[in-house]
Length: 556
Image (cartoon, rainbow, N blue to C red):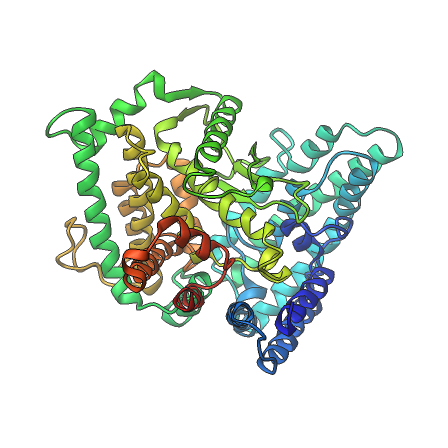
């Protein structure tokens, strides 16, 4: 390890002290009894660490090419994080998927639960929850005073989430957690007291959002070009031409839907529409699973099978990475997501399914590609393999660096790769992959269009409201027309796009840049290009922004 790596390793230690909940999220042990300081001073202290580290990075020369990559990756990530803080984005951000509240609530999903010490840590955090939310309110108030506030509509939607999480007649997330632990005696009493306090604080936070903060929020959800450019660069780790990408989104969606019609003809017969093929697949009992526990078990079996078959053939999967856990999330917010392993792999990488309320039937043809996206060769391979590479990557690279365009772009590339490798020969499974790809292409259009309030092209291939300006209502109509997602989940998705500008396109745009990087490697290496070697070299770089990724690959 050279000077850059030493600096990166020191940064992780200092970062974890200032981000104890974040430490749990990324799997750093030793902080499970504390929560983050979400006061203005807490945010300022974390920003100061970032500012100081960037200054030291600028004055430190790398000792090796690997350290050059690490330096570029760290400068890019920390520089954009600081830019977001200075612009008031970090301290004011609150939406249906990302906020201080979501970070606090979500940390309990990842905490160890076995043994008295683990349960005492949970009790400690539950009893700190109310204080952390009070500090967070102060930060949100001060951000609003400075002219930085999220959209009113997002605050109202998060308030609704608070209602669901604290519903006394439903699945109260805090009391349900304590019930699962089953502790009695003094520890059980502390857990129940903490759950009651966290429940009351969350319900009060919902009231705060509705009555105090929402009236100060932005009436318009559109971010505008300046805010969107920063958000897009942050999520991609790359600068892109937003107008060209918007136009490309229409072309890509049209291409994918043409391919889907071809597959639909294989499923139903010549001339069949996509919707007819979807109806036939949904009506097939062999492709339907009843009950969320049975669906979880199906995901687990498919994820395990992919690891077994891909290891030693298309990838060399480290032993620690050959285990993934499929779990049901304690919330019903909708969606499937991945959380990485702890540093010592005592907590494995996990695929989570937050089943929407009322959903009891699951179509496997839609989710085969999702398992590959979240598991292997998608997120689990990428994230967990990075955690293993201590001989190649410093600690910051292994546990802290995450770039949505790199990670989500790789996972979407992994879905396409499984098609290339012959794993989606079943027409239903292939239609599921194409539908998922089309879904991501549609949100490139909608996300950029709504936030920049662009004109819908007059010659768009779908004849969709030509010449009109994008609004959330048109975004909903477009997504309903082009996406085969259950209405509850799609509502959540649209709210997510409106509240988290630039994140949703990072999947499809990230995949586009990964494919460009692969093509560039083919051109550089000619007949010597080897796909397995390309994947190994690319993943061994760890997570990094997509512009630094291309620079690093060009040096290999």
